[in-house]
Image (tube, rainbow, N blue to C red):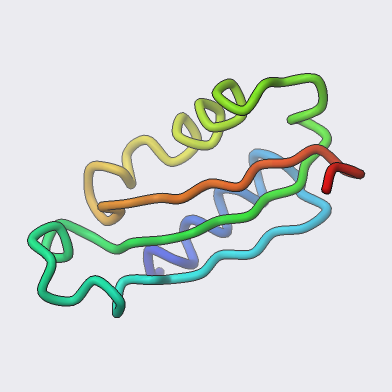
Length: 87
């Protein structure tokens, strides 16, 4: 399973999102020193689990879900985590 597919599967299982998009930006970072350590990804996830949580708490939940991938496949992760109905 690719890193991108694993990220999506884990986020689906953990957050049961109403919307989930994952963009692999790795090609934009070719030649960057960190590119050898893993991919660069941007995730947008909309889940009821984020209702009432501040941005930092939401990001912590996502990082916790993907923690071991951060060590072996993700170099950079941009997160847009929202509760349903948030712009």
